[in-house]
Image 1: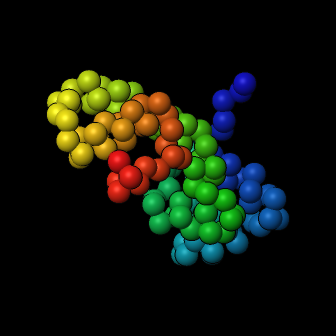
Image 2: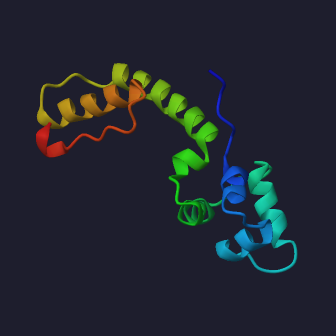
Length: 122
């Protein structure tokens, strides 16, 4: 299986037949060279701000994790690795909060970031 692109911004912009300048306007970018910012985001030459990433989500009607699939996959792996380490570091006290924490860390370590655990059910 091939690895995902760092982002799919250009793919979705082309799907909607929008120019970089039009997307820049929708993002609220101002001044000359505003389309350059969109180009840099698409080429991953710069990291979009959180506000820009959320605006892309609204514009393209796709979740940020899908628009930035390669970055999402990389971050998911890094968090899973750190969660495994933290799981082994934490005290195994037998109380409700610790059990919930252990369950959340186990879920993260397994790379199951889409499954949410309700603390009331832990």
